[in-house]
Amino acid sequence: MSKKKVVVVGAGLAGLSAAKKLVDAGFEVQLLESRPLFGGKVSAWKDKDGDWVESGLHVFFGSYQKIFELMKEVGIYGNISWQTPSIPYLNPGGSGFQIVSNEHLPNPLNLIPNFFFNHQFALSDLLKYCRAIIPVLMRDQKYIDAQDEKSFLKWVNQFGVSENMIQKMFLPMTLSLKFLPISQISAQVVLNVFKLFITNPKGFKIGFLNGSPQEKLTGPILKYIEQNGGSIALSKKINSLNLEEVNGIQKVKSVQGSNGEVFEADHFVFALPTHKFQELLSPVFPDSEYFQNLRKFKGVPVCNAQFWLDKPITQDKRLHFGTAGITPVFADMNLACLDYKTKNGGSMIETVVAPAENIFNLGHEEILAKTWGQIASYFPEGVKGAKVLKSSLVKIPQSVYAPHPGLEKYRPSQKTPIPNLFLAGGFTKGHEFFDSMEGAVQSGILAANALIQS
Ligand SMILES: Cc1cc2nc3c(=O)[nH]c(=O)nc-3n(C[C@H](O)[C@H](O)[C@H](O)COP(=O)(O)OP(=O)(O)OC[C@H]3O[C@@H](n4cnc5c(N)ncnc54)[C@H](O)[C@@H]3O)c2cc1C
Image (cartoon, helix red, strand yellow):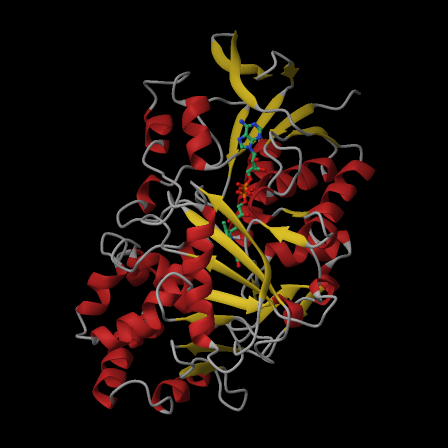
């Protein structure tokens, strides 16, 4: 019997995980990707000197599940280098504090000592924080889910947490998580992450890939797909779909590329950023509530910057949170990532630049200058005499979906009203990992399972 054909549009982690699951289930799978490289937001390419430029600084959290299973199946789980479970926060001027998981205490007590011995916050503040966090630990998921209509700011304000704590501790967290200030992010999203960090014994572990995602993550997954009969076509931007009616039921017959090329299949999985779904699907299904709801999802603008230096500015290989403003999360990748070791031994600082809304339209040089100014402020001693040899900036106008308050109820299922069309992407429902590498992988698997069951 000939295999059923599936076209998967979009070769980010969601599309790749759906394709992997589908080749395993015996389907003939073709991935179509608009860019000349696969991996989407987890992609990287080499500059003229052979150094890797990344779309984004990526780390794994110990609470992830399906992405680890997938990596084990493909034989690449060993490509993650796990760090000691602690996150240093740095203030301009170099002072700071850290959140360390105390291995001698059980969850959730393992994180509590940090808050009392960091000399950054008043005791009254810490007690208010504990009062806020206890309901998250004591109550069930229903409590967390019910907080979706509130912003995280509104949620912490209920407990009278001080501005100092909000700015220094929570703002870098929400900017790192979803690149959004705390007034714009749903409390449910942040509380879910707290729960995963605090209640899962492995939740607080942080891991880096030991090389580029092309070589250590997405590339090997793609190789697995190809070895199992799947294929990929790059530089194929899909810009329309053709419908047909079979026994009175509307189905997708084919998708069409910008150069007119047509790709037919029995089933289709769209694994695209949210705005791309709107471009493709809304005009075709203007009256469907399911597709109308997709319009509520918007991507957050974000930038990723890398700075190569002539000398090391830190000896600390951990992921850092920064409290200065637009550099919420960064790392010295010369130390954190084996294959990114610089030839001269100098630091290579990679940082997420968020919130990016107000600076996005500035020129690259201006954004890089602002960004470097903040990074340098965290390492006043280290940067003395250090020279930035080169830098890179990647701008993503609509990156991960923005989990604004009240949006949770509109997250779509992977199964759509069109029986042979399935969606994947962190914004689709059925998992608590939102738009992250884990969320993308879980959504791809859920889409593939829905297709297999259909
Ligand atoms: C700066 C940054 C840092 C991040 N850090 C972390 C982190 O530390 N940990 C973590 O877990 N997550 C992190 N994330 C989130 C993570 O990268 C994403 O959630 C995940 O990669 C999304 O995967 P996806 O496949 O759903 O979407 P995408 O990666 O966006 O993939 C969609 C693919 O579809 C393609 N496409 C678009 N339009 C078309 C079209 N018309 N036709 C064909 N193909 C098309 C795109 O080119 C792309 O390859 C970060 C994201 C960014 C931007």
